[in-house]
Image 1 (cartoon, rainbow, N blue to C red):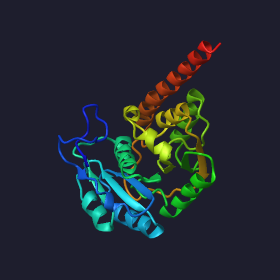
Image 2: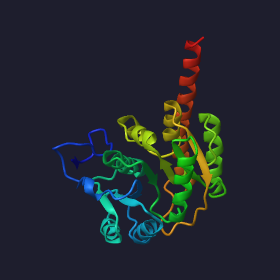
Image 3: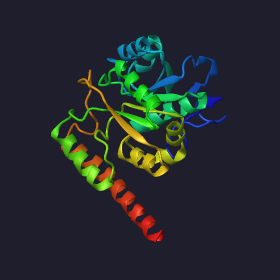
Length: 262
């Protein structure tokens, strides 16, 4: 079984005998029931220590999805003990993450945990998310830190909650744990259209009946780089326009469904 190059719609790699080979899936590589998925783009400065910390905090398997980095991210991740999927084209953070989620589904993992490569998320907190997943009735757990972020982030959160109708505290956290049902939904082709792992994904989960819960976690300062969304007001405005459209569309669809039911 193989992962080939991204499909024509720009989504994650799919099974195919054609296209540029990214990686071969080895079913004997799976050692544990939890897979930690790390999308990474030019994270050579931090990836080794993050992978090592995750493995030490385990038992977890780790896959790094290298989003066509121009540095040694992939080599360093492998050297630290991760399995690496190297994408032949830059797909963006969410599609790289979805590639790892598809990998989790293909190998039959019970749980997938998504975690950023920039050092914000503490590997020691993975157990908080997985424990909440096993003890609560939810299918997806968000590692939430509502105290973090700039004024731009807080303004965006308030507006997105108001327009989309979602009520979660930390809607942009990339630190999440998914059970098999959430893995199946978010590895589907329907999830390919999103650019960010936040409002669109949460709205999709809501529509599909996927229960989402949150657990508080501490988030650290980035080891390197900056947020691609919240580093400037123009970037924030672009992000908000995209997600506001999703929120409005969701509310309109909900209203139409209610009217049909009358």
